Length: 244
Image (cartoon, rainbow, N blue to C red; front, side):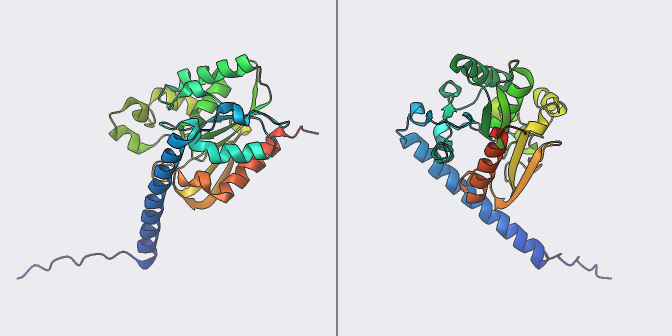
């Protein structure tokens, strides 16, 4: 008796469409990242260019392997809306541990005597911001944070990397796990993320925070989306408005 071969299972049109959409988002994400890194490399902007303004001070914390110039379009928008925007040049391309990076930002805040600070961060910058708020800000200089595509729960992809600065995002990492268990400042954080992030399959939802999911895909490309810019401006405005 001839054995019948199993019939191949076909993807449903809905599932196939979703995969194609995610593949497109993935490709566009790397195009944006490449353009952004090139723009950052060629930028002649200086930190002092953005430090004027009468509204609440903003401190920018970029992601891993990102210089502050990578976020320059968003920096320009925040500055155009009246905020003095500060960058911490000593972070370089942001490969330090969370504790070291948070201490570097804390030293900058103290040296510049900044108070009522609102952090605007991307990716790893969101973890550094939370580390700062929980463990390195005894004077409460930071009032709030808007974090974009931050891996608050880590990324299961990180364990496949040999580079320590990327492996640190593995969910089993002790420092990341301890930071996740500390909920003291979550209510002062706005987490902004897309419906699909190729680098953080776990997503960026943070318990107790204000979570904003946008109909956009990508880990880097989301930075340039007008909906993200609007969400950041709204979060910054809310954080900078005194409670009645």
